[in-house]
Image (spheres, rainbow, N blue to C red):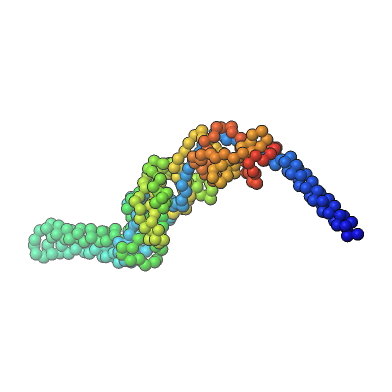
Length: 333
C-alpha cells in the first residue's frame, strides 16, 4: 500500500516538473519572438549656437546729475522724466524773491542816484558827467552781481540728454550740492555681470540678443569686458560686460532685460535631438530588426539639440528606454 502511494507521489512530482519546464520553454519562445516598438529620429543639418545668458539692465552711455547750487525752496520745475533736453536748458528755478527785491531796489536806487548827481553837480559847480559816470559804473557792478545771483537760482541741463528722474518738488526745500535732476545721454548701453568662468569666454565684438519677457527686443555687440571685481552687495566675484545696442531700444534707463551672448555659431552642423542621447554619449541604432548601442562624439549641445559626428540622415532610436543589446524591435509610425 505504501509502495503504491510512493509511486503515485513520484509521478505527481514528475508531472509538475514537466509542466514547469514546458512553461519556461513556452515563455522563452514567446520572449524570443516578442518585439518592442520604437521611434526613430534622424541627424539633420542646421545651425548650432552656444550662448551664455545673464540678467542685464539698460543704462545711459553717460549718466550725470544737475545739482542745486544753493540751499533754498523750489519755485518751479520745468521738466518731467523722459523729456529730451539740450545743454543749458532750464530744468527748475529756486525761489529768488530776495534777489529780485534787491534787483528792483538797485534799479530804483540807480534812478535816484542820477537825480542826486545832478543836484551835487549844481551845488558844487563841478561837471555832472564825472559824477554820473561813477554812479553808473557802481550801478552796473551791482546789477551784474544781482543778475548773477538770479542766474544761480536757475538749475540748467549740463549737457544734451534725457531726463531720468526729478528728485525735487515745487515748494519743497533743497540743500546746496544735492542732486535735483538725473539725466543720461541719448546713447544707450546694456550692462550685465558674469562670473569669471563665463566672462573669460566672452570677447569684444561678439553678438548678443536682448529679450524681455521672452520676446526679442533688440540685438547688441559686446564692447567691453571689465576685470574681475567683488560685488559689494553679494560678495561674489563678477565681471561687468557692456553691450552696445545696434538700434535704439524702446526701453527706459533701468529697464531689466535678459542678455544672451553668442559664444560660438556653426552652420551646417550635424544635429541630433538630445532625447536620442543616452548616458556616456551613446545612441541606439537599428540593424536587421535589432538594436545595438554605439558611442558618438558630442561636439556641442544646448537645451534641445546636440552636434554629433554622425552623417546627416543617420537614423537612431528616439527616447530609448529599457532596450537591451540585440533586442528585436519594430519601428512605430
